[in-house]
Image 1 (cartoon, rainbow, N blue to C red):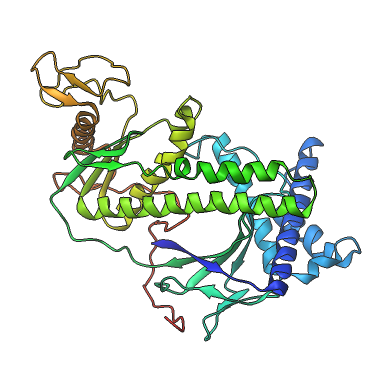
Image 2 (cartoon, rainbow, N blue to C red; image 1 turned 180 degrees about the horizontal axis):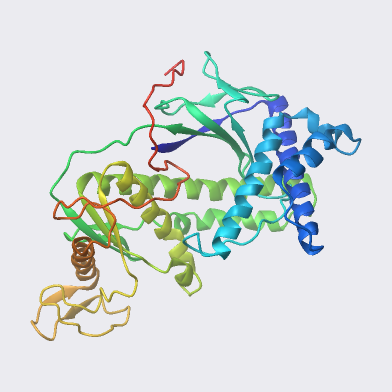
Length: 414
């Protein structure tokens, strides 16, 4: 299984300048190669191969006066930028041909130095873990890292990222074995909402923390100060950093809360069933701010990859399933109901239902039915082994089956 571990890095002034050069060189190589392929396509010429682009835009470009500064950074950074462009084109072609599942992927676009996120990617030839707890990066130096936890194995690649608030992060990819938890008897269905973030089929409610709503007062003040600064001034740049840091705090708190809640649910239940919501559609309604503040997609994604990592069953119930219209006691479908109706009485068996709890119970029953029918590629509730589905890589800890042996990475100071 392949996992990703993120750590905060604290480069000094000279290292920040070196990283800025590396970000810029990787961006220039990406844009030059993308421009060559776009021009070839417009002229009706064949697709330009990576080997030709590497020779023209990296090897020969270093010998020219206009691109001589490409020699200031590691060649691994430039080659990885070209490989990332190849991956972007492959995803676009696979999406256009129907070979890639999920939303349609557009063609690669040019990068800008004003993008909110700058990053470079390195393989094991360009970085190493030092005995003093730092991480050496070629032509940048030894970066000071805040080791919040130990790496489970030796890393195979490294991504250095700078976000919009000026923070630096190191993201390591490691190969390790799945951490299968002991089996439990409990199963749960989850109904996601806004008044309560989630309602479980056993009646428990998880309140919505609403991190963005709680930070709106301070954000309004910071954005008001930003709007009063002259464009292009240093004070405006400082004010923009303050706004970006406040938004980063909101995102970090939400992500941390999602991780804790999803981990607790996965540990307590052998099978988790959740409704597949149309978040992109709900994000265009009058409830858009509350929907984005809840972060349902990120939460469901965490449940999915943690279920794979810990050997749990995870099933998504189709969004067309009428979970709020069916009585969970007798199965009678009572028709659609407006959102302001939070309780209703079944017209067949006269059972009084809480809307969210009833929906969570229906999601649980439908999820079990899907698993027993064999449409879920996970071990079902009856214990019948079924092939597990592939899970997309996550930013925090991603899981994908990979044959490897677990080793322990030696990091001094831990």
